[in-house]
Length: 82
Image (cartoon, rainbow, N blue to C red; front, side):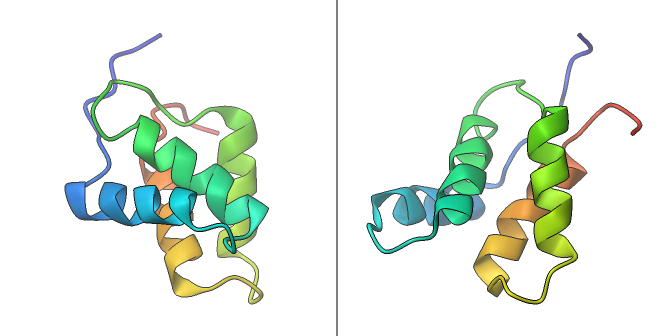
């Protein structure tokens, strides 16, 4: 696996942590937030399955701006051309 120098910003990681603590957050928002948080301080990169979910969120009108921000961050942090 190649090294991933891209990381989630501190501000987005903070929002992701708040989303994970929010019991009313949707399941997809929590999944994306967890992935964003895992990429804040490590060389982790977005996997194929999570990248697919994030792409679907970005193409849908049903998700809010914060969920889309998580999705956009995850898509941008993928090193693999898909």
